Image 1 (cartoon, each protein chain N blue to C red):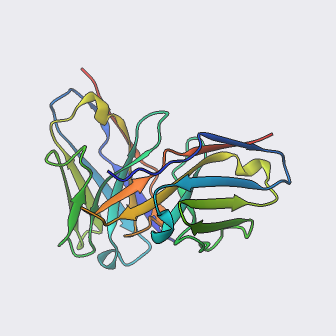
Image 2 (image 1 turned 180 degrees about the vertical axis):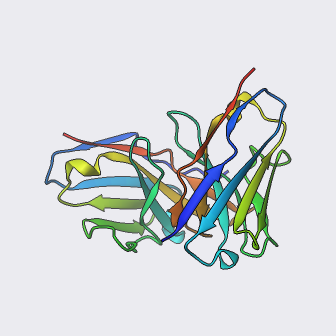
Length: 109
Length: 116
């Protein structure tokens, strides 16, 4: 099965830049989507198709994808960004499946 | 605005069935594919199933294949997940979400607890 790996946690001070990675063999050849989930809430898409930002998502959120790593970058981090973040890919290599990474908890110090 | 409202969750003994529904509004439902995604308490997201806009294509996670069935009624703007032969490890919040490759809007979820 397709495995997508995220670090369990990332910590950053307010105003700094947070980078959350999503790793898989040749993930750069796939399209990656990112979701934010705050406690008690449903997930919210913050980046789609590697780099696109849905309406209403601040410009501080950006994405990149190359080689074996996709990255969600949050600049000028705010306390309100504290949440779990999940990457997701659409795997079409064998049977169709949608795969989530294990999630990364972002802590704002 | 897009609204997705799940219902049908509850407590059920192992081996029994449950029927989850998701009522959609605020977009052209008949043109949108729909997913179910679940999240065990304190755990990460797990994709469960997807159905294409017209119901002609359906895909399932290996963990639910043969036990769960996804369907839709475009006349009622509703997508349904029939969950049979439930096991304790099926306990989770179940979310419906809109989209195909990406899941651009999510409901608030309904909790399914499988316990004797």
